[in-house]
Amino acid sequence: MTLAANDLTCQELVELVTEYLEGSLPAEARIEFDEHLAMCDGCANYLDQMRRTIEIAGKLTEASISPQAQESLLGAFRGWKSRPQP
Amino acid sequence: MLDQGEGRPGPAASASDAALLEALRAGDEAAFSGLVQQYHGQFLRVASLYVSDQAVAEEVVQETWLGLLRGLDRFEGRSSLKTWLFRILTNIAKTKAVRERRSIPFSALWNADADPDEPSVEPERFFGEGHRWQGHWAPYPQSWSTLPEAQVLSDETRARVEEAIATLPPSQREVITLRDVQGWTSDEVCNSLSLSETNQRVLLHRARSKVRRALELYLGETASPR
Figure: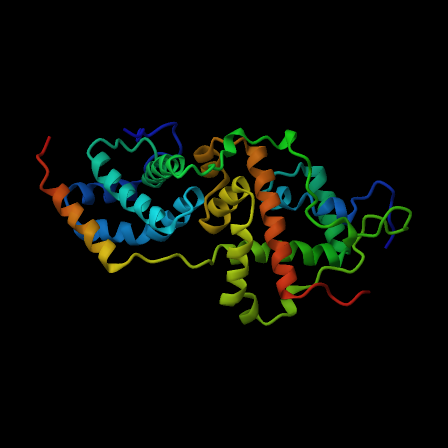
């Protein structure tokens, strides 16, 4: 692999990852990014790690409501139902 | 009284919103319970961005549902039901945060230009000045695709991600929670937090970079050097 002086470095690339994933990189920068990725396993791994990080963040467990809280809300809903109609 | 107005227009209420609203207004208990179950966990997570006490966060969520009931007859569907609900939630949460004297993440006042750059990856990970590979990875980041899937998606891994998010600066925590944990679009987040597109992206970038770093530390530092 040959490197021209104005080529994107790995250190520069990692700062562009979110713009790349958001699709907000200007076309020219995107091409440069893709070209770098194509020949750099380190950055390909880095980008993949970032994608996995996002994926795992999307799989965090959400607390479920306790039966008591659910029951009390249902009570509030029933109270609301019997409100005086406008 | 809290501002529970529909605020600036995000995406308007959809057809499924309209059907749900109709069911709620007609007193359909299953529709209400379904909505509560769908949003409870998300509400609790978002409430916890603003109030530190778990019990207070639970209160915020309960009050949000009461706020929904209070506003239901007046809600005109100029925003989506989700946007409206989260606006009620954050208003209540912020009011309680003030009472808790907790500093709230005020992302809207955050400015990427005024904040010094934080590198996404420690500079030591790259070859330094004078090296012919300057700015390129010294040891490569490891490929996680060689790790067992069960390890990458284990409870322990997710706990590390929770932990990493919890220690982020408040504005970064707010953005990554809404974008990556809750799956909001960048438009929804910008709208909800009154953030510019750029500031949102910079906060997200910093947050994701730190969470990735925490995962990398947990999953194994680096692949063998080339």
